[in-house]
Image 1 (cartoon, rainbow, N blue to C red):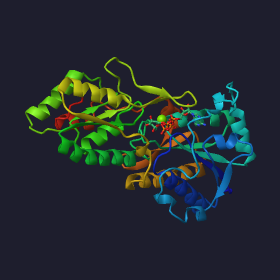
Image 2 (cartoon, helix red, strand yellow):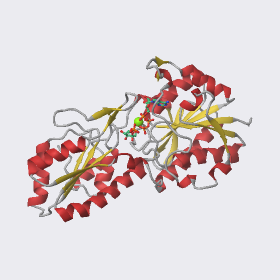
Image 3 (tube, protein in one colour):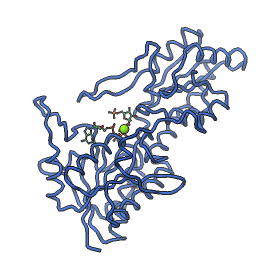
Image 4 (tube, protein in one colour):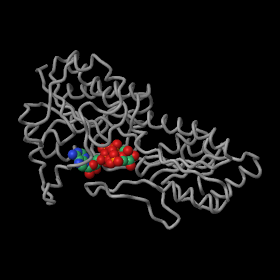
Length: 361
Ligand SMILES: Nc1ncnc2c1ncn2[C@@H]1O[C@H](COP(=O)(O)OP(=O)(O)OP(=O)(O)O)[C@@H](O)[C@H]1O
Ligand SMILES: O=P(O)(O)OC[C@H]1O[C@](O)(CO)[C@@H](O)[C@@H]1O
Ligand SMILES: [Mg+2]
C-alpha cells in the first residue's frame, strides 16, 4: 500500500477520552501502515489559520500520560464554523474553501475528524466540498450522535454526575433537604437518565418526557410522608422546559445558544409546592473533565484503530460506531440526518419506572 499522510482533528466541546483516540489513530497509522499523521490544532480553525496550525504526531507524542488525560491536547472549537465564519468586524464570511486549501497545502491524503453531531454535519459538508476522504469518530458527553450506542466521553460524564449524587446524598440526609442536580446533555437526556438511575434519584426530568410539576411535588411528598425519608434527589436535564414552556438558554460570546439554569426553576417550584428545604447544583463543565473512564478509553482505542483501517481500505464518508459490543462503520449521510434522543419505550426508561423513579409524567 502506498504511504499515506493523514490529518486528524478534534471538534466541538471537549470530553474525556479524546487523547486516547488520537493516540490510537497515530499508533495504528504508524505501526500498521507506515503512514504519517498530522495533528491539526483547534478543530477546523487550524486549517484556516495563517499560518496553518498543525504538527507531525509520532509515537513519542504519546509516550507520557496522554492516554490517561482528559481534554484534547490538539485543542478544539465550537466557534468559527467555516461556512459562516464571524469576522472581527462582525461580518459573516464563507471560509470553507480556505479549509479545503489548508488541507491540500499539507499534502494530506485523508482526514479523521473526532466530533459530535454538530461537528459531523460541518465536516461532512467540508469534505464533500473538497472531495476529501473522511472518516468520523463520534465523541461527546451528550451521547446524542445517531447510529452509535456510545460516544467517547459519555461514560466519564455520567460517572461525574453519579459521583455528584453520591456526594449530595449525605448532605441532603443531614439537613433533610431536596437536592436538585442539573446535568448537561444538550437536547437529549442520556446523562440524566443514566446518572439518575445509577445514583438513586427519586425524580429524573428529561427533555424527551414532558413533566407535570404536580406529579413531581406528589413524589417528593410521598418520599417525605410515606417512605419516612426526609430527603430526596432530583436530577434534571439542562434542556427541559420551565413551567412556562420555555427552555433556559444564554447566548455565548459568538451568539451560540447554550442551556443552563433550569434546575433553579425546578428547585424553586419544589420548595414552593412542598415546603421542603431545597438546594440546587448546576454541575456544568465538571462533566467534561477528569480522567477518562475505562469504557471511554476502550471505545476511543477501538474507534481509532478502526478509523485508520477503514481509510486503508479506501472507505470514505463514514463514521465508526459502537453497536452490539463491536465497532462497525455507518454512512455519515445517515448519521447527520438524525439526532439520538432517549427511546422512551426502551429498557432504561422502563427500569427507572420499575424502580419507582418519577419521570414527571
Ligand atoms: N470551527 C468549527 N468546527 C466545527 N463546528 C463549529 C465550528 N465553529 C462553530 N461550530 C459550531 O459548533 C457546533 C459544534 O458544536 P456542538 O456543541 O454541536 O459540538 P459537537 O461536535 O456536536 O460536540 P459536542 O456536542 O460534544 O459539543 C456546530 O454545530 C457548529 O455550528
Ligand atoms: O462549551 P460550551 O459552549 O459551554 O457548551 C456547553 C454544551 O456543550 C456540551 O457540554 C457538549 O455538547 C453540552 O452538554 C452543553 O450544553
Ligand atoms: Mg453536539
